[in-house]
Image (cartoon, rainbow, N blue to C red; front, top):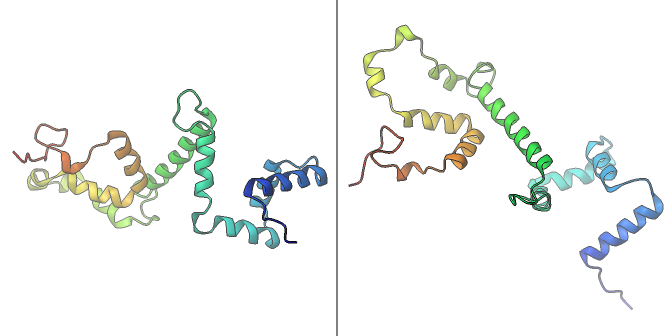
Length: 173
């Protein structure tokens, strides 16, 4: 007689029971850290399958939720600190492509166009300047920073009207 298929939680319980019996001092954390740091092809074959096609992102969402997410009473400050530190690294790298590492980065031409020496500035350049001309450049060169700023400011450029913070906004009235 065929045995009924185990549910996902039953499989996890059986694997944990096996690990506890066979390797009593080998934690789940040790297992995962060893698996993902390994260079052994027999191990990396499994971890690369897990990492393929961003299949790890739903698990990261579970970790975020289990750490409290945005609930102020349950929020895990260590998780928030980890996220902010990595976001800072990402945004810093993007900014470096326009500043200190401009000539080695992927946006060399943009960086060059953003640098204008004061003797070359003309009155017409100043009069024709529009902040939105810069926006497309910054959206292309610093997409993650722009995503964070839009999340914080929460301003949709199509909603801007006269009197808004945008000096070039035009009212539909």
